[in-house]
Image (cartoon, rainbow over all chains, first blue to last red):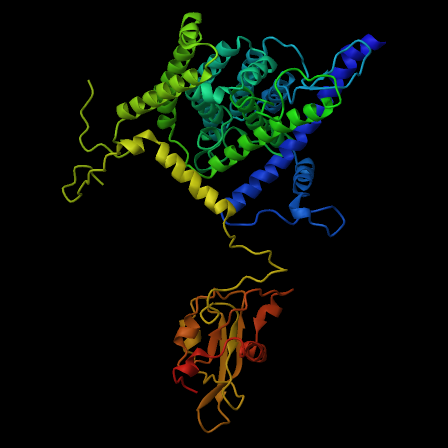
Amino acid sequence: MQETLQIIGIPLLKIAVLIGGLMTAAAYLVLLERKMAAWVQDRKGPNRVGMPLTNFKLGGLGQPLADGLKFLFKEEFTPRHVDVLLYTLAPIVTLTSALAVYAVIPIGDTLPLQLTANGGPLQLIAAPGCDVGLLYIFALSSIAVYGVILGGWASNSKYSFLGGLRTSAQMIAYELPLGLGILGVVIVSGSLDLGTIIRQQADTGVWNAFAQPLGMVVFVIAAFAEAARLPFDLPECEQELVGGYHTEYSGMRLITFLIAEFLHMVTAAMLISILFLGGWHFWGITGSGPIQDDQWAWVYSLLRVGVLMAKVMGVILFFMLVRWSWPRFRFDQLMALGWKVMLPHGMVNLALVAVLCEPVVMAAIGSGRPAVFIAISWGVALVTWMATAMVQPGDPENRPQTHVEPSI
Amino acid sequence: MRRDDPSIQWIEQPKLGFAARMYLPLFVQGLTTTAKHLVGPKVTVSFPEERPQPGNPLIYRGVHRLNRDEEGRVKCVACFLCATACPAHCIDIIGVESPWPDREKYPESFTIDELRCIYCGMCEEACPVDAIELTSLLDLTGRSREEMIFDKEKLLSVYDQTKDAEPMPSLKYGGTL
């Protein structure tokens, strides 16, 4: 009985909490996004819908509920020209893979809860001890792209199809820098498990953002592209493609796509916080080792959850602010940035980290002096960045050619 | 347009400088702009509770009014210049012989279809005696189309409502009566 509870009950409970929490978070992040959009544009934003059947407005907090109800009651229209099976499958694939990623993402460290007789403290992760966490995340985020391509293909409409095509090209171009950005972190921590990566940063007290600035820049930009957020939202740019791959969708299927898209952003924010910003660690507040079983256990546990959530929230706010700060890239600029700038930067970072982590080099600079490591990393980052700027054409080349040589 | 058209002068685009190619100054510039607006003052208002304030109520183009002279009579002399100037053809005037000695005609009926009106202010521009003016009243509602056709009495009552807040600007400049 105890064993059944431990094997089935606790994971199910965690999954329920995770999915419920994520769906609610996604709904309220949509509200936050609309509010941010309004504030940046000097408006007030949605502030009318409050508690149902009363006059309390609560600053518009009822808006996500109303939006959800609206989508529930909308007609689920299936155009006659679509491939019905793939058309129905596409949003399910996208949302499933977007949610399944959270199985290996920790939302804190541990809680000192003894739910079973012989179990340790409760791990705040749905699948604790998954040694291939990052690999799993990568595999699933690639499947999410399939959902988008399927949706674009099955819709049998040129706008959806173009959106799907753009997505596939963009995702392939930016998976590489994404992977290169992560590789540096994996080399330093020696594990693909996100919990171990956080613990390594907590133990040394040096977040990867300081030790590998180049890796962080590459990863953050690639994460923007993977989440299809502005300035990389080519797959669904409204001015050209109506709605991109979800042009032909309505009702619950549409909101499934939209939630999945938002979850990609939350995933990206989670990964940035965990891989580069130290996860639940903050100097002088959270401590670094495993939580001791004393009277302060609860305080430290909740502090670690709070610190991680605060970091994730900060990254999400950055994502939303960026949306209104820069215009969208043109497609050739997007590809040029991916292949000509991000990929070389990622390789330089990988080579740098690999060399610095060599035992000989570590012995030479002294393993107890992370400041040297950080200084070298920032120096190399600066030099690489400036070198890239030098070789960039100073001419944007976005005007018609007056003299076109006939090509042979 | 032909590209080798001699009448077209192609201007060389300025080259990007080193700072622009570094992208960082532009990055910071964009973020500071949005961050400033994020916390800056908002221009919209929560409408039914707060009223939007038109920058200058005297030149705002809202609901029309028909001005009165000192004796409380309608100033209009039924010259039809406003109806002629109106691009939406929303002004309908029936002019009859005036009972007063200082003018020849006056409007027996003066109706404006507020739903047809495009609030361009041409009638105000055209009026030779400053009889028709646009006020700063902006929330105009009605439950039927008939209700939105304003007759002379209604337009005069708009004047009575707004004459204190928005005095006739023409008076200051020695306007006609």
